[in-house]
Length: 151
Image (cartoon, rainbow, N blue to C red; front, side, top):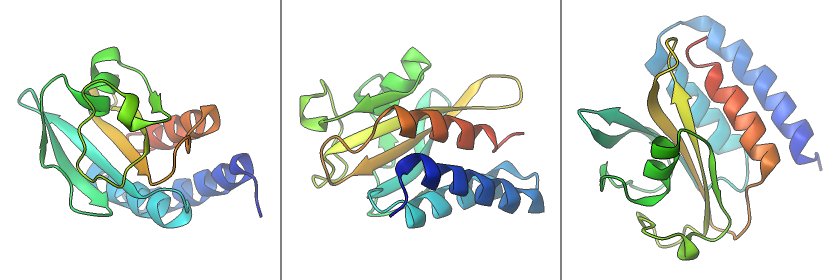
């Protein structure tokens, strides 16, 4: 079995090659979500929440039905947006204000997505059914992968 670092290296190369087909950000985002969700076995829910008119609204995702709009400045997605950084939550039940769109979610990582101007336009949100699924390796590689969307 490949270790996490090696898996991400391969995924990065695969996604980078797939994204050459178009410069449309929506198509690129949908591709990133689909590849990550289907290639990483511990990714239970994988999607993007977009900042639109001051609200975080789900756009594209893979997994169970999502919360469509997230309560402002509450939960992990808003924490990533408000703090402008990746947030790793080993146990969502211990995160103050966690928004449980699916009660099977146990751990989570949120990565801000920046456009060409460096503005955060969305957050990548990944949930796992297991505790402690995400670590610094996920953070580093998911940040590199979302950077491919606009570049």
